[in-house]
Amino acid sequence: MTAPSAVESHSARPRPKVSASGARADRRTAIGAVTVVAVAAAVGGGLHLAGRPVHVTSPPLTAAWLPHVGPGTLPAIVIAALVVRHGLRLVGTMRWSRLLAAGYATAVAWILALAMVDGWQRGVAGRLTTKDEYLSEIGGVTDVPAMLRGFAGRILDFQPDSWTTHVAGHPPGAFLTFLALDRLGLGGGAWAALLCVAVGALIAVAVPVTIRVLGDEAAARVAVPFLVLFPGAVWIGVSADGMFAGITACGLALLAVAVTRDRLLAGLTCGLGAGVLLGFGIFLSYGLTLVAVPAGVIVVLGRRFRPVPLTAVLVGAAGVVAGFAAAGFWWPAGYHLVVQRYYQGVASQRPYAYWVWADLALVVLCAGPVAAVILRRALLRVGPARTLPSAGPAVLLALAGLLAIVAADVSGLSKAEVERIWLPFAAWLPAGVALLPVPGRRGWLVVQAVIALLVNHLFLTTW
Image (tube, rainbow, N blue to C red; front, side, top):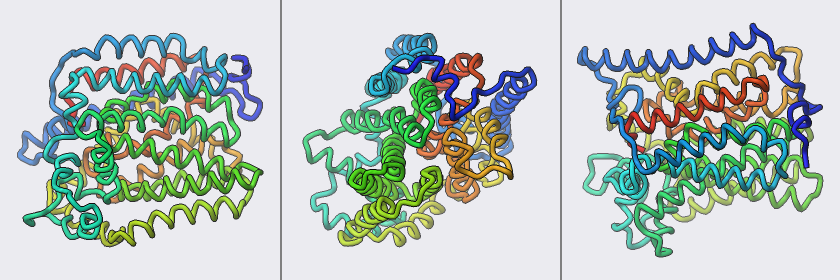
């Protein structure tokens, strides 16, 4: 059992110093992040009034303004209050395995409670059944191998058999997942939604496991309550991107285990598992190729070059790619067609000059203003005199999430809707919460919960 003092003053990572100037800088950073959200809303609204719409319903959110309460309101408030009151104490007293189990269960409850603010049908069971979602196409598939062979041919729009928006906009992995669920007798929106929630909540386990395996248990423990009350839970329940975040986070956790274990069998097994999950990830979403950024950081933090587990990772990922290619889907061809499909739709009308910075406002809503504070502190820890591994996982994993987000942002292929699309990257920003001074952590946890509650109660989100 680890005593609270050990968690707060882990010998490998010095406790962040509390200073008046540092606290003021943190507050200014958070206020600046919230200001970006407010400016994005004001500019988006102004452009609409000027006849130059940014093509979302409540800029910058893809959501409708609808203040409301629902059956999930009271449970969500109670869960948030309990985590805020007890979470930071329990992370120092619970056994590691029990902490992970409690964190996962609470994350599931938090996600479902937020979704239930909109009610069961509107908030959960009906989310993935709309005409643009994956489930709308399942009834038309009678031959899975034929579907895969002809998948790319149906990506472009304005054809009689064009895929619906979400199926066309992604490789076939997600569609196959929901199709498999249906074939197992678990069809319909409720089962698909529960799968997304159950897998998406795994970020509350996978991220701390990664940090701990890379050598900083104190940082791993303190990250748990922040990952439980992650504001992005609003979109994990329910969107397929929540499932994508959970799968890739687990793949990265296995990669961390693979590159740090001395036992050959453990490195080989975990390496293969990581390769399969990360390889499958790029067949869930084309943008998940950017998971290579945190993956590279994890390899660097492993400190020693281990050819066997790294080879196993590559073999696992290559096996997934080869499997899809043998089934008739070639990823590069699909990507080329998706870029064309992207500009056949509303994306061609969404102004890059607005979204290249307004997307960052959505990151603030998804990861919370504390993410900006974490990143400010993380950047201060990375100096020219430091080697990358010496900065530690709390610093580098948070910065890896930022780098992946920046790369996705400047690409112009993610204009709007990134509150869900970037969940797999935003989930790594709370990895750096150990950089926050201990006295202020509970306050930041309150802010995280309040952001999620406000978004879910003031807007009817599309996901």
